[in-house]
Image (cartoon, rainbow, N blue to C red; front, side):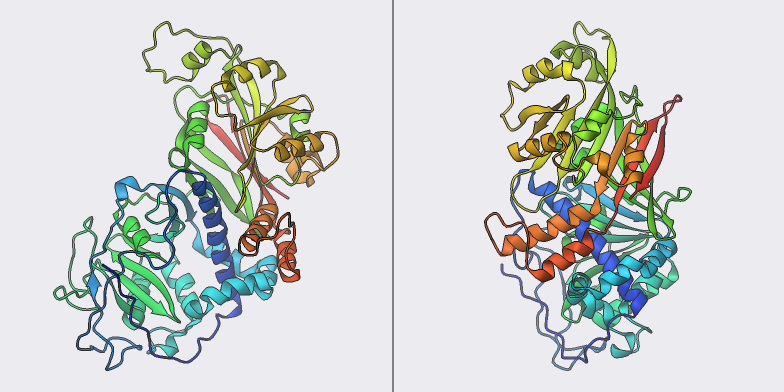
Length: 548
C-alpha cells in the first residue's frame, strides 16, 4: 500500500535563528554527523547489497480524518487526529549491527568546545556553515515562545542544555534498513531531559508509529489513547517543526531521536551498552571491527584484538585533542612494538586521507602452512599443527575516502624479502591490486594512479609524510603497535568536491566554482589527528595521540 504523508502544518511566523553560541554548536554537531555519515556511506557503498530507495521511506503511517483534539500550538479545527500506525516493514534488530558510534561522555565540556572554537565560529559565518543551517536552522531555531510557550529559548538550546545534558551516543547502523541515518540515544535520561522531550511532542507531535514488538506498551502518552491508533508511552512520535521531521521515542531507560523511524526502532530494540566514563575522555568514536566489513574482520583476527575499538578525544584550549586508540588484546596477541621505517614513511604521500601503521608478528617464512598454524584460533584442532619461528613485519594501509569513482586503497609491506611469498598468495585472487615498489617498500594498490602517487612521494616529486606537520611526523615516527593518522582537512575537502561533481559532472575536473573552492579552503584548515596504541610488557595497550 502507498503511504500517506503527514498533514502539513499551518503557516507560522518565521523561526528565529539559534543564538550565536548555540548556532555554532549546531553547525559543529551537524558537521560531525554529516562527515561521519558520509564516511559510513562510502564504506557501505563498497559492500554488496542494494542501495537505499530514494524518496519517501516505506512504513510511513497513514493519517486518517477524524475529530481534532487541541493538544499543541499547530492544531487547528481542520487538523485530523494524529494516528500511530504500524510500520509496514520493520527492520530486524538482530540482523542490523551497530557499525559506528560517537559517545559524548562529558557533554558540558564537549558543547563548550563546539560553542567557543574560533574555526567553528568562522565556519558558521561562511557558506559551508550556512549550508548546514539552511537545512535544519528552521527546526532548531524555532522558539518555544512561538509554539505555545512550551519552553523558553530555541530548540537548539533545549537540545544542548536539557535533552543532551547527560552522556549520550550517536549510532550509525549497517545494512539497508537505516543506512546513513544515525540515531541519538540518551541513556538514563534525567527529569529535565524527559520533560523537554514531552514538551516537544506536545507542541509539535504529528502522529507516528505504534510501539515496536521489542517493547511492551505502557500507559497512554500525551498524544492520545491506547485505542483507535492513539499514542502510548512507547510510541515513535513524528515531531514536525519548520517543515522538518524528527522521530523520537521515550522508554524507561532511554530517549531516542533520529531522522528516520527505522533508526529509532533499532535504537529502541538494541541492548543499551553503557557509555564508559574514562579519565580525560570527553568524546570517543567507536567502531565494530566485526561489522564494518570483511577487511576489518581480517585485521582484528590478524592482530589478535577484540571486535570493538575506539578513538578517544579530550579537550585542549583550541579544541578537541586526540588521546589515543583503545582496543583490548584477546588471547595471544600478534602485535609488536616498533617504529615505522623512514622508507615506509617516505613512500606515503603527505595528503593521504587515512593511514594505518601496523607492527605485527608473523611466521619468518610466509608459507601457507605456517600462516594457517599461526593465524588460526589457539583452540582450533589442526592436523600437523606446529609452532613456527616469527619476526615482526611493518605494514601500512592507505585509504583515500572518495564519494565516487574506484576505491583508493593501498597496502605497503616493509619487508622486501616477502615479495615472492606475497606474489604466490595473490595468484588465486581477482587481480584487483596493482603490484610495484615505492623506495624499497613493496606496494599494492587498487589503481595504477595510486601506485604512481606512492612512487612519486618516494622519489621526492610530491611531499611525503616526512614533510607533514612536525607533531604528525614525531607521532608517526615513534614506536607503536598501531598508529592511525586521519587528515580531516583533505578528506572533508575531497568529499565536498566529489559531492559537487556527482551533481555537475565534468570530465577530469579537479576544482569547482569559486564558492565551493572557498569552502574547501576553509575545510583544508582542519587538522590531521593521530591515535596510537603500543603493546606493553604486561600485554596491555598504552594509548597516545597527536595532532597537527
